[in-house]
Length: 617
Image (cartoon, rainbow, N blue to C red; front, side):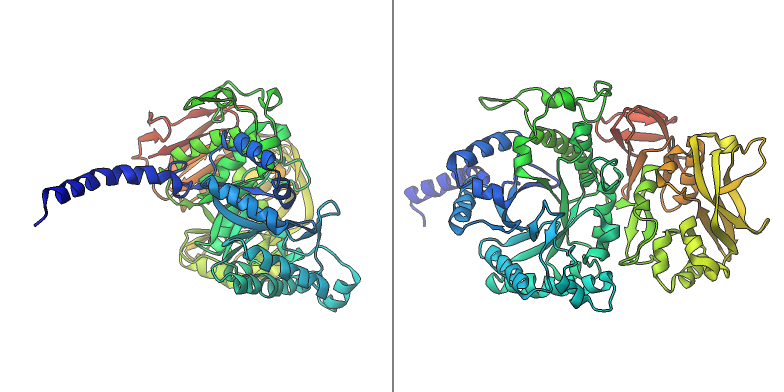
């Protein structure tokens, strides 16, 4: 039997427990209360970690960055460019960020000198191999999570490497060398020092060329503890010439290679000279691809890259998804007034909008595009196709359960590809091949359809009743037997009243299925010059695995999800008219996922420059 004092004590405990739990929340993971659908992190390079040995410097940068964007985690780099952070400094910096309630991870960049064309270690040299191993062990002594930044590859051809390569190609040699190095010099040593460590390989954005420098997507994602994705597309006019859509597409590709192991995306300030819309767009595309975490690279960019009048583009003020003026408005947090001043505020504004949207979107789906491991041909083409409104979903295997499968020239790396095509068609599915595939296949495709794509070219600009292109451009001439295959879309110069025409989209029946051939211009960017009606017909025919497609011009992407939601995004510098089209004609209403507004019957809409709208239906 409890006495009165005991009863009173128990009652007080019951009353105080909820309050105590609430008080304890801030000391839990920093993710609590910041973001609902993902985690936001940043990364500090080794040379900047060393600078943070200065207490005043680390306090000032922390205040400037964290007042503008809430972070959940910081990755502290131990090594870059032959610089190793001293143990004393590393312990001080770790204690500082832990004291602020942030999660901590480690980072390694295996470069000897970035200014010297990203000079990497020489994995044929015993001395360099020992250095790589030591760095892994040193880092594992501090952290349970370690990310290898972009450079776990080899780009040197010194005498030691030439001898070690022998008669093999550079690709063959480097794939084997780096696959073994990852196990022997990084994973095993790190796990010996810290059995709880997770070593994560971060892959850059140039995935079609990985094999040439030793990144091995066939082996590494399965023995490393996780992988990470570089989603930086920056300025498409810069050295890599990557299209905006890659920031989404590459997340999906790596997630399809190793389901459940893709930890997140990674965006830097590259392309900022185009205006902060470009930076915001990369963050947004990373998140709508359903990345569970994003690393804002790097912490000092969040601190140093100032925003100002240069960053406000001429299209701002017209209802854009990224509203520069709204982002720049001072805001109150408690008694403090926060005035946006750096890239960190751009990240906060963009990610807050995405966090409100993402819980309403299902799992991304798209046209299954088969890219075998280490394959080459029509490099990065899927990103151009994404920019003309064909939703991409790249896989390292030929999917058996899809109505349609897309094959670019890369698929020819599979020696059994023709038999797989025949099986897909016999069961009533469709196969979409590009002219690059047809040319590379030669006579191998003859059992399905006798086509020729030779070195002959044509200059075209007229798509007949489907309109005129915005300029003349060069396409390969696709030859076929009359009445054996049929042109769905044609082009010439001119086509209407002209003397010649060439297929842009060709179809051929085989067994129960249809083979489509999509003509790819010599310059992939000329896909953007196709007139809107032609693009609409291409989307209609090549998206049979989806409920819908859209009508409208190029440089507009559609992102489709499995819960009857989708998003349309305009990558142009000007507004465009678009119209979603549903295969089920009974669908008469859509709901805007951000505003809650209902759109009925006529789904035509104007998308402002560099803006998106997401809907359920």
